[in-house]
Length: 209
Image (cartoon, rainbow, N blue to C red; front, side, top):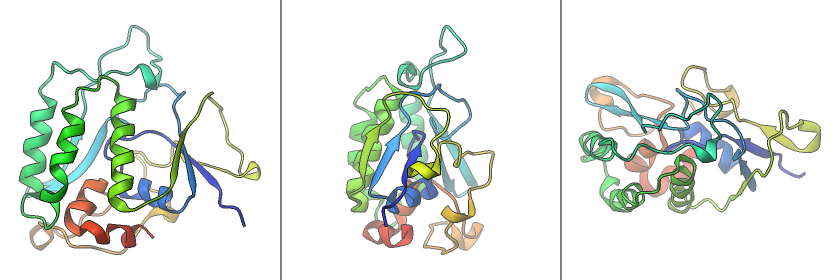
């Protein structure tokens, strides 16, 4: 039986559930023709720290019009977000088992100065797929479609993963894994893939499946 093809919105260091959807597919399409949406995972990532969950946010330059194409959404490189994210990640994961093995390559991408939010996210996703050992093919949509019908073999997940909405049950994993602050804060689910990789390393893929 042919696997359905998910269509996902772009995301900055996407949530674990986002990658669970990718891990279940042979081919995934990233929505490259939508409008940018504020307060979404498109420019946000959720990690956990000694003080609890923390959102890392990329500053996006304001567009001249309300409807801003996602591929024209630019990161404000004048803001010190790189230093802020670096400090936050080091504080959160420096004592995790695998953070030191990955962080230099993550910094290389973030410090590369890519102005486009979409291109930055795409570079990160492709690198994360390699780290996870996932062979899922990533393609980009070429036109915007309001709907991707299931009867045509699609799985429309563009609105499935959002900070203000519960994750669909199909993509929730109830299996806990090691976290640095779990002894003080308890296990925190539904975080960025950063958390899973930093704590589980090569075993992260088994958690996604």
